[in-house]
Image (cartoon, rainbow, N blue to C red; front, side, top):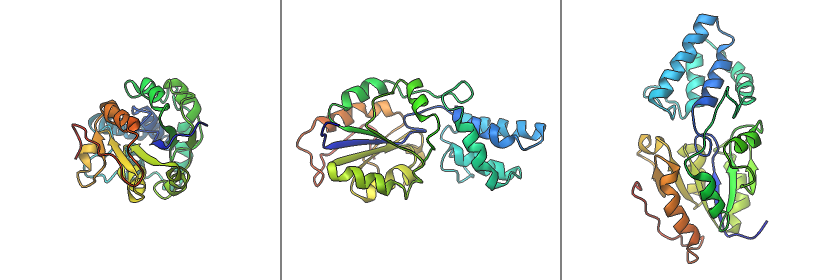
Length: 244
């Protein structure tokens, strides 16, 4: 691996991999233990909620993302929490297929191809190592990442990833859930970028960047990557139209 002193650390679901397909697949898998009519009702409710709140952070639910929304709604239907792990794993077996479709952020492949000239590119996800490579292929991102970490158990699991990459230089952690993807990096002095609708739904947090769409941050991230004057102890100031 060539030496690069900056690292872009990406979450997977909701950051590199967009669309509600995997969450709906999880809801379908969880609902299989219900009577048919009730199963359809659960899936319909999940889909309707995601249509209105794609992040899964529906008002009144305390859900932090779509997967957490399914967990909470499943409990409302009497589904035992201990059965959800199996349902989740079953749903991930369809990741990137027509049963759990995913889409890439606009222009991400070209952006990463340019970015990897200046930075290490890393994926860090709580998802298990089930069809991640296949999904990256579907997304057009195969072969672009230097490392992929799965089943991390974020937020606590981020510590080991940061231990690996922070000694090499500056890290910019990019994700859609502040508490899982960004807070651990922020606490260690790394830069952060919050993407998706959660950038509006979590006004009490202070990422370096925030935007509804990852592609809105490409220019500022590229500027930072090309700035040889920034250092881990004195990061260059970053500004975007949506920065708070």
